[in-house]
Image (cartoon, rainbow, N blue to C red; front, side, top):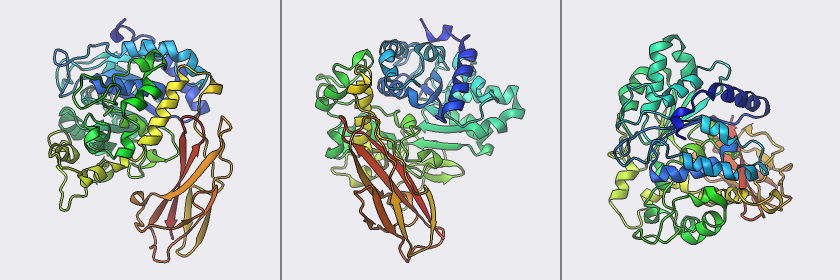
Length: 476
């Protein structure tokens, strides 16, 4: 079975899924476009294990500057073996969450996009047409995250179709779109999307930080984070005895120079969907809040990119990609103990421990009954998530009401996310390791400044799992 031949069931299945999602939750809507590189394959395994956390509207194969038909091509239907393996573990995944989408539904939205060459966007394809159908659907106006794990050409083709056939709907469509691009892996964002859709100021994240999950992770990640990526950890927690889907995960082998069998290879595309997982960090509210998918700063208009701390650095006006992205070029210099590069990626790698433990739990869900696996805690605060305060005031923060579905004991940690707030000095948080904590607003805090406090809750299950709530204090 190839993904091209299964277009007809889309309308009925997508409609039924949407109505259910609207009535019971507000999971993010996502469409992924991927060039099928080996690290995309790794990312797809993780993505499918989190498919219960999204309303997935499309899994589209696209091309990129690195991969297209006839050039390092994984095949038009490269995703099908992963969907087949998902089908085998699906009954067990349902024991842990009934919101996992059916294999039949996922197959119906797995389609071929524009793949004939790098940046090709003239041909109307099943993948581009699915994106058009989803964007024009007036029955659901929730935001939809268009993720480019490869090039943006299939997305561009879809938008061009809308411009050509439904120009009167462009503004309404643009209001729904959110872009998360893993570099700009072809020129269609610069040559078509920006000139034709830029006037609508679509929120756009273009990531270079993803290199924290890139092939060269041993070169620059702190040792404390690398422990979750080495073969001994990966084999125990994901690769071995976790069912057919995890068995497809393409970790390193002993033949790969500089790596051990089972070592994490690369998941450069995973941050695109890690950004949308509802961990409680509120990262979807603004790219500069930070979360599992990194933290970004506004460079121009509504375009958000990686924060570069090199003095005097000027961002390029055009494409942000392998030729000029700061982190990628800094990495090539191979500077020993390059703290500037390591800190550049900290907004992403600082979460690797919780992220990998969460991955391990999902791998367990493939093979274990509910009672033998671990599930994340639910963090509830008595206080409001948005607080207005005057300088000098003392604020009580209380995580009473937080629970664990497995009845596990919970550990609490309150900490200030300094980079996310505009008040940059470090605050002292009283009783920061308890359920109830206090913070005193400094007297030198100025009106309009913000302070971000994270409530981090970790359970005592195996593996230990972490969820959060973010409190944002705005100074009067």
